[in-house]
Length: 208
Image (cartoon, rainbow, N blue to C red):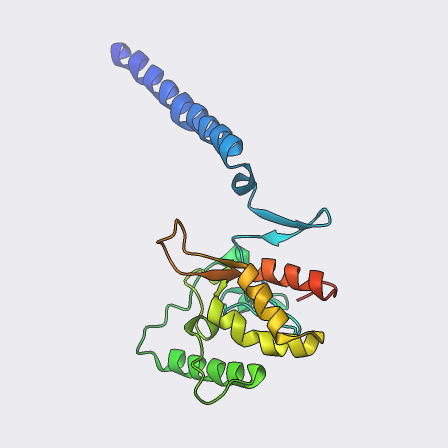
């Protein structure tokens, strides 16, 4: 028995050092060296102050800002910790509604969101509401919206800011990112970056 104990203990310690210490330190060092911004959380700063991350959306609701796609994340009820309440873009509780395509509740939610979107953005009867404007992402934290979604919102934001819609459409185009690596996904606009750029051309305190 004693003859087996020594190699087993040595192997256990060796693999703990390699897998539990050396490998994590090596990958962390490589990430910091080659992808420092991403390794630090892809933080966005404004005048030296951190205002969010490129990869986690934020819940903007003021009419003078571009709005993100819906989010169904929840959080603890401050009045009763045993219960949960709607808390859009709660990064501590990422998740989706898990409602299937045939769900009546999902259909009602999408219909209600579409009506609200049409009303607040003054869409015409032939304008198709972008899918991402009425459906939540799987994570509930999507930082991007489609280009069509941003352009439809430009009219409302322009009226609230007192600037031209053409100027805002140009801002949307300037903040549009193409598909990843040119082939993955679709063109999109980061909602936080767009609203920061918006405050630069028509200054207002960045608030949600």
